[in-house]
Amino acid sequence: QVQLVESGGGLVQAGGSLRLSCVASGSIFSINDMAWYRQAPGKKRELVATITRGGRTNYADSVKGRFTISRDNAKNTVFLQMNSLKPEDTDVYYCNAIDEVTPLELVGYWGQGTQVTVSS
Image (cartoon, rainbow, N blue to C red; front, top):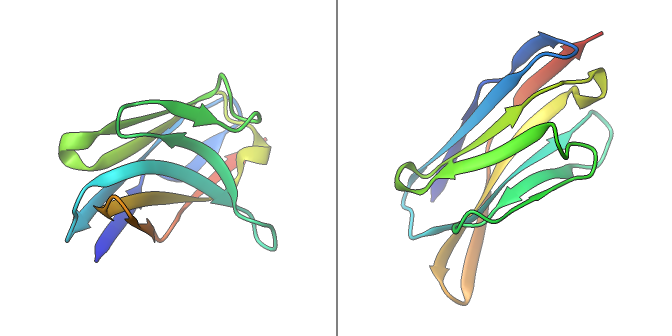
């Protein structure tokens, strides 16, 4: 089992910045892709950004140019630097990690979520 623990959420004014962190621990084989998702109450969880083990990134159109995803493979940690925050970025942010048990067996894990609130 792999545990993901997020931190860094909070309350910030519009235009401000926050940095989220997520650390993977436990019985890890090899963390493959890592990602950040977000979800508002009653809405579908949506992808914010992904990063491969080699550092290739992908972003939702709504956050391009404002958010940056990065990772530290040695520490099994992924970060999300969020700049120029908007009230519509208010959500619970979830970390996701794919553990490669074998090349044919990939297991996904979720963190517990961290609240980000942007005031106008």
